[in-house]
Image 1 (cartoon, rainbow, N blue to C red):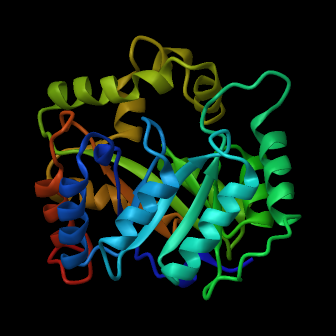
Image 2: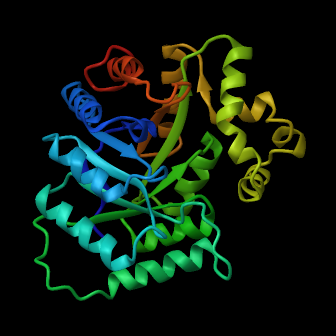
Amino acid sequence: MNSMKALELGAFGIYTFDFENQPAAQMRDSIQELEERGWRSFWFPELLGRDGLTHAAFLLSCTERIRIVNAIAQIWSREARWAYGAAALLADAYPDRHALGLGFGGVSRPGTTPLTAMIKYLDEMDELETPNPAPRAPMRRFLAAYGPKMIALARDRSDGVQVYHANIAHTGRAREIAGPDTFLAIEQPVLFESDPDTARAIAREHMYPYLASEYNIARFRRLGYSDADISGGGSDRIIDDYVFWGDLPTIVEKLHGHLDVGADHVGVQVIGIGPGQSAMRYWRMLGDALLPHGSVV
């Protein structure tokens, strides 16, 4: 497969749900400012109603350089042929600026597992015959993965791995499974709040859906967290491992921890922002600190 590394996403990018709550004009202004400020990549999920590939096409049309990444497009939202066709068109229209992330999307389907569903989906994509012209640049795809079998599948049948909500220990394990050449991207929530009680209260609200689902509880246990860590909204230990909070230098130092154990890229998700509000002031701060022209390394 063609490597995601060729997209030159940079060591850090923006990951956000925020655009789901913004009108098109506000999204356009925001993505253009991020591009002007030097951000090389913008990651967004498909969750709350907007079609992920239409959304990607809009953002690409508003910009000239920034890479737009579907993180992820849910495989239950469209058949494999339509995902392939849309991504191939974007690769042709915007060469080397789009990546198609595919994931199970957390939706339960009786009689199947995320791994078997993903294998079937990839098989269908790879067996397609289409009259559409080949894109000018490679169509790049990666998989959302957390468990070792899905990470191995991403290694073998895609251009990379994206892990949503990983502590640093898990990032190191993911690198071991993925091997040295597979692109490994990590999503990391950050919170600009230095008061421990306030920060952990906000972080617990963010983490609640993950600490309350059996699938996620199982993965936390595999990483050595006890029932006491997981129950009651999460111990300080697990909250601090999964949400990096504090001032800018503290957050920047912790973000580099993922790179230190093998991540190629960290998509930074600012949390604690109300619906319809913009995280732009925090993205500006992070850009000054994390991008090559910044003053904090």
